[in-house]
Every structure is written in C-alpha cells, then in structure tokens.
Length: 357
Image (cartoon, rainbow, N blue to C red):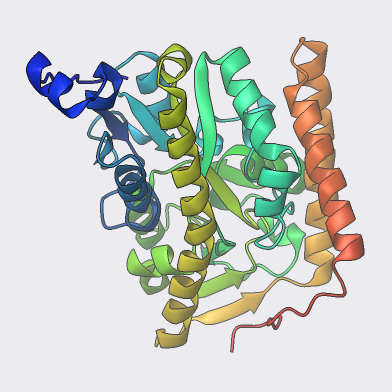
C-alpha cells in the first residue's frame, strides 16, 4: 500500500479541532482481473470502492485498475506482495493448485452453492480461515470481497451428457476442476485467458470451455461459436473473490478505517450475489440463439461429487504431509458444512426449477 498524506496547515488543524489522523487520506492502486465493463469490476470492485468512499467520508479511496494494467491477471497476488499494486481483488483459484488450499478456499467443485456459500464464509469459518492462511503463508491480509452464482458448465462443440464424454476432450478450465476432470475422467484441460476463449472455441482449438456466468459468457459471444450450452455449473456452484493487501500495511491502518473497509466488503459481497443472479437470469430470458441446452443429470453430478471429494481429500493429505494443514482444514470445513446444509435445508421454499425455461 502506498498511502498519500494530504498535508494541511497546522493552524487549520487547530482551528477545526482535527487530529493528524483525521486529516489523513489513503489511496490504494488496486489491481483487478477484468475490463471495467465486466461484472467483476462493474458489479464487484467498483461498488466496493464506492462504499469505502462513503463510509470513510472520502478518506480512503480504492482506485480500480482493469485487468492487465497493474499486473497480469494471474499475477495479482505477486504484484501486491511486491508492492507493484497497493491492493488486489482476485480469486484464489488463480493461484493454481500448488497449495491446494487455494483450490478450495472460495470455490470447490460440486461444493457450496449460491445459497450456502455466504453463510459458510461469514458464519461457518470460511472467511476467518482465508484471513489466517494469507497472513501465515503469504504475508498478506485478505478478506472476502464478492461472491457470485453458478457458472455455465461449458460451451461446447461436443454433446456432453455423461462423464465418459469428457475423455480426451480439450477443455478450457483451471485449478481444482482441471485436476478433477483430468485425473478422474481423462479430460485434457488447458488454460486460456478469458479474452482468448472465444477465438479458441471458434478455431476449435477447444472442444469445450468453462469461463463464467451466463451474463459474462453470452456477452463475450461464446454461444456464437459453440452449439451446446451445458449446465448447471457444478464445477463452480458458487464462487468468491478476495481483497488482498500486504499484512504490515493493513495492520498500520487505523482500526476504524480497517473496520469500515471490512463493512464495505461484506455489504458488497451480499449485494454482488443478488445483482449477478438477476443479470444472469435476464440474459437467459432474452437469449435468442438456436443453441441446444443440455442439463447434466444426477448421475453426472454424483460421479463428479465423488471425484471432486476424492481429489480434495488426496490433495489435502499430501499438503499436510508437507507441513501445510490449511487444505485439510478447508476441505473438512467445506464438506461438513455442505453435508449439514443439504441435510437440514429441505424445509426452505426455493423458487427454482431444474431446467431453464
């Protein structure tokens, strides 16, 4: 963090009864993963910055830079650690699976969904574990910032109806789901940045691709270049982002400023889910393409759930053997919370059908 102290004349400070801390303003150059008009900035980073501005009476400003300006989108964590960016807003999955905790932290394949992710983050220990991990292993301070609903499973040139159809398929995916489909189903996962997915599908360098939610994928034109739209997005039932800053720089902020940033992040998180859900549904309601929609059946879902949990358990055990128990703690927390939620949430009325109408 590089903060700018707005100096005021000593006489003015005395005249208005203000302290030096009252006069201090902080500006954080913040790296993000996407263009300004994409949902990750339009519905997440920018609203957060606006809330911080209001809550702190303009004393704290998060200056949002679109993806690639301050850092490559997969290098935001490193940019913050190195001081190239004062802050970053990104997703743990962009850190890969070297530390499997990052492949579980805020999105786990077949894991917590749009109804259960936020309760787990704020009341099930997920947020506290994220903060603890970043401080102990990365010298960063992190708080959850923004969550979103299920993604599209894939835009595809192949008709995927059973897990065996994924064998040898060139599949744009990353992180935990890439590891699962490669190890369990014989897929051939590959990573393309979001801006390159359309071209790769169009040239059939990919058989299928997952990237984001309906509003995002459709805006990027994926239905134009792949005939099949496959859902639900069990690879990312719900997902979360985080705000990161260097630990020492966060700790140096006044306590009231830290609290107000946390409140702004929490408010943004709750709103982001609802905002993107409505945007996605409006996109689907207005869609006029002649694509074929394919619904993954319960057999596909269950085989995927078994494979994802087997991968998570194995990855967590390997990390623990190397002295890192965060993945094990995350895996246990996520699966136990999900099992509890599934077992006891049946009394709730949910306005939902299994198919897009």
